[in-house]
Amino acid sequence: MNHATRIMTGLLALAAVAGCNAGPTGSPAKPTKVELLTDTGFRQAGAVESSPDGTTFYVAAYDDMGRPTVFSVDVDSGDLAPLHAGEPFLYPADLAMSCDGSTLFVADTGVGVLDSEIGDPKDPLGQQGGVHVLSTADGSLTKLEAPGIARANGVVVSVDCESLYVAGWTDMEMPALFKLPLAGGNPEVLYEGEPLRSPTGLHVDANGVSWVMDHLARNESGEGLLFAVTPEGEISEVIGGLGMGRHGGVSLVPAGVTAAIPTYNEATKQTELVVANTESGEVDTVPIPDLAHPTGIAAARDASVMVIAGEQSIHIATF
Image 1 (cartoon, helix red, strand yellow):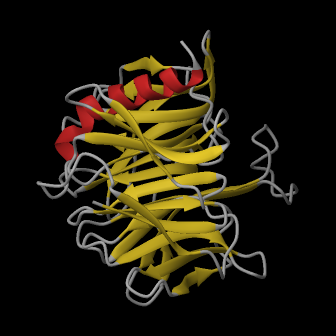
Image 2 (cartoon, rainbow, N blue to C red):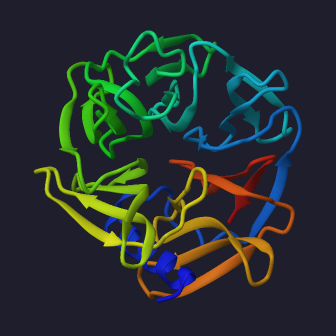
């Protein structure tokens, strides 16, 4: 199985069970156009998110001073503005939007090498992250109360809009998957330890199954695995050898039928949006010639629009 086939198999496995998270009905199965929205005022863009109505995009990146920042992007004008820059952000790795559009949950990995010294206050690089709660109205920021979650790599709001799922590490530096109320509280540890190694992006379907991407987990197909974790804490390997990039973004299109991942095609030397139809099994691509180093992707909950990021550009996909 080659690299492209492994990616497609993983997409189909993810989307086949996640299709019930559909947005508005009636959208085509894949974007008909991907256009540049903005490429100035930021660098090293990673995770992205959309407001529920698709009028505002959000991106985790760095500003011109090198500060970790969450930006808002007006879709009509392409104007970009910092929503919050600098401390207490350390390494914002993922974004999730509340269903009413009022709040962004920001997963922060922190900084430093994951080892036994990471929690030592004498180690200046051993700074833990967690989950931040960011107001989309005024940029006010608070830390989500989540005892036991030291670092957060991935974050998503449940289909019923009541729970937050977090992929990251415990305060004992064990890779884990957590579930907790949106308002914070003591997390439920859904799974901890091997075979998870570096859990990152995740999706949770209407049945409560968590689909967790892991950059460093490895099987005979290679590095980069997709796992499924049931609400009862049973874990299984879905597909390996995905070879994910820095962020490893994957999303369902707004119609909920097709899974999509921005990727770089080594054969054509071009970035493209690879899409897999969960009903027919058909695989197709949409070229994105002006996007380099693809990272994040997200669909609006209530509108037929997606946001796609490269390290130095933000793009809009329309249907």
